[in-house]
Amino acid sequence: MKNATGSFLFDFLSSNLNLLLACAIPLYIAGTYFRYVYRFRSANRKHENGSTTIPPTAPYIIPYMGHAIAFLRDPTEFVKQKIYLATKDTQRPVHLKLGPESLFVIQGARNLRTLWRFSSNLSPNSTFHYALTNFFGMNEKSSKTYLLDDSGIGHEPTAGSSVKPHNRVGFLNHHLFTDFLTGPGFRPLTTRFEKEIMGFKARILDMCGSEKKETKRTGDFLELFTMELTRTSLHATCGPLLLELDPDFPRRFWIYSCGLPHFLRRIPRLFAREAYEARDSLVASVKLWHTAARLRFEPRYVDEAADVDPFWGCNFFRRRQETLGGIDNYDADAIASEDFAAIWGFNHNVILAAFWVSYEVFRDRALLSRVENEVAACADPTKPSGIDVEKLVTMPLLQSIWAETLRLRVHIFMSRKVSQADLNINHWLVPRDNVVFVSSTPAHMDTASWSCGPDDSHALNEFWADRFLVPQSDGTAAFRLDASMSGSWIPFGGGVQMCPGRHFAKREALLTCAILVSCFDVDLVVPDGGMEMDWSTCGTGTLKPKARIPYSIGRKGDGGVD
Ligand code: HEM
Image 1: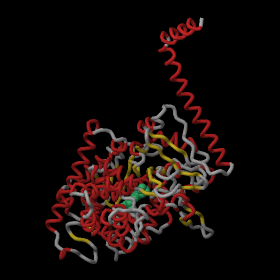
Image 2: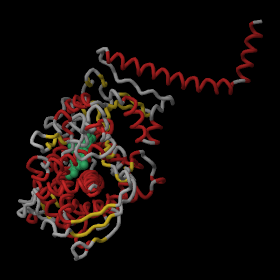
Image 3: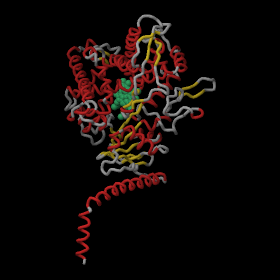
Image 4: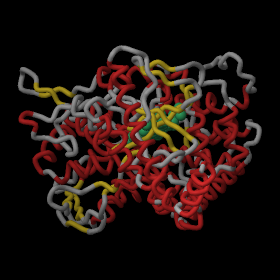
């Protein structure tokens, strides 16, 4: 009898194996999902009750893969759905599983403020390794230097680190960047940019023709920035030689920029030829520039006052040759990739941000007139650009436009490895050796952090020039963006690794806008409701507009600032 039952069961199971599998797999998947939903809710409850808790895993369906497919298919939608909307009202940290890797997403203004305070326990080196290998074409042997560097960015290496001083790539680069872009080092760069912007103005005047009030040229307003401003900015940082050797560099730079989604998703070369070819040709040009500059440079060419020479441009690139050249496993290709990465960082986000600032100003006549008043108040014929930049960057409306542009247009991902000890962020525990991840999108769209104006009439997904202005009793308005907002306004990140180029970026974008406003009449053809953003590069910084913006430009009647 027992044998008969056993053989019946065996026969039943073997003849219905497909059916059983067909039922078991969805049941297993549903079980996994509901188990995670249960754990997600109970961990949040535990934290609310005051316990120190590991951020719960956002529920997922596919075992092992976790959220990887959703993330790779559409990172933007993923950020909106899993990171932002899943915890929209609370902005709690959440754990995401991306195949074999995992991320702890930190969000919420208070949590971010706490996170930045733990900077010395957070290493960006695995992010640099990822970016240099995947975005900037560095070979693995060289980029691995970042993974091996556990010495931190302090002058004294982290206790227990045995990395040789010349291989402390994180520390060496960090200090080259901060020396160049902050403190006394940053003045010469701004002064050079102020001179170079006159070349930008002259090229546009050429385009306009000689007649006052004659408007010329319809094209894409973005190109004024991607082509002309990139040229200006490259001159200010790299000097003239790079562009002399490769005048087409700016055009291919922006082709590369459009290919960023491929690099972000690690799409193989076979399926993204144009992006890879643009990237490789840009790195090759940087290498060519290095070779030519090395051959031609002599110390007597250095203009000490301006901190510049005609071959390396600013002293940053000259100093980097020596520093990076001393690292084991770094060759000429690796240094070219490093400098291409720096050139990308120095230009990409700020040039797009400068575009959005001017776009907002020229598409709104009332705003344009207010901006004209602020720019006119900063006219100073003794300055290289005819404008007092230091005064310009303190004007309330212009500052508010800058802050609002970055709030709305910068969608950037930042990640760090918890390097020395478990991290406790307001009772959320991230164990050591895990990766914390921050996206600027939830912070910039957090309804709890931002004013939407009287009657809530200025939604957070729209540009509102006055969002950062506070009315004063004397009828004026003051700009407000203080330390209390350091976890809410995060286009430049935070903590010790916060963008050191932020001071220069503000000057570059606002001075460019001021030159356009004071010297040119610009008419933009913008669709009703404004231009949408192209979300395909979400995660890499400032987004581009989704479509071309036809425009016309002419000399201003009075000739503008000379
Ligand atoms: C709107 C313009 C810009 C935005 C939104 C932006 C954003 C950022 C962010 C978020 C980081 C930190 C990344 C992280 O924490 O992983 C960063 C780093 C950096 N940025 Fe910017 N940036 C801008 C403009 C600039 C400019 C104009 C320069 C230089 C001229 C610059 C130079 C750098 C450098 C060198 C770093 C790396 C710092 C380090 O590793 O120590 N940035 N930027």
